[in-house]
Length: 286
Image (cartoon, rainbow, N blue to C red; front, top):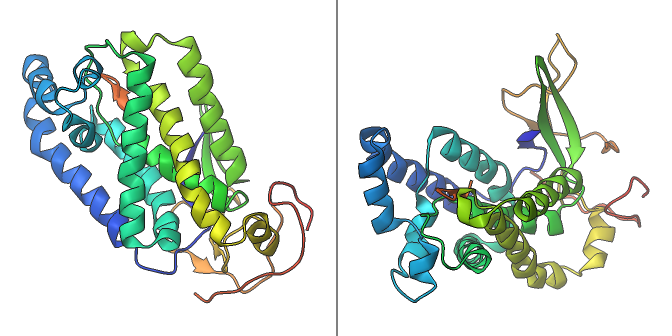
């Protein structure tokens, strides 16, 4: 299960999110197509620019905490990360402002790096990826918009279906998977840096908490029912399945809202409308 889009349009142009995507893609294309198939050259490049926990935990090569956030270990790694950033980043930028969002993103990435280093401070395996910072974006999104609607693709063998779920379900399951996988895996063995994902996610929750409290905390949820504080985007349905189409531009709905229910190691890490009324941001009651 992975997200393909949300129904939560932003009200300001997400220049920082677009810039982060462009920088990540540019950096990836600057090295991977030329040396991606040559393990010796690729590992030499990562030794200079990726985060090696054994080095950083001793106070050496500290610049790699930042540079590793813009490196990726393969095509699917960067495509997946940029998709998550594209879906969830614009709404955090909308709420935090351009500069605040940029600082938030970088701080989440730094927290993710330290979380992975804490799991295995003596690891010599380079860690690359924006996943830790993007996990922070997901954590912040969960706090502000727990019931925003997210379209996810379900792939079961030959069955492909798109369904709409609340953000708390999709993001909660994702976070739970990181915890379970992290506990079951050997941090020193490489693969996915699950603790960087979990650390970034928790950092995002904590860093967005002041903004959430400024908006009234639980009262913000009561005003918005945990949904976006403006009209949601509506997507057309495909004729063959009746499920939301994954293509085409969305449009904001004027109808009442419906109640619907990496970082990799090498590790890789409209119009405003304020609904009123009481109700849980997590459940279906209003």
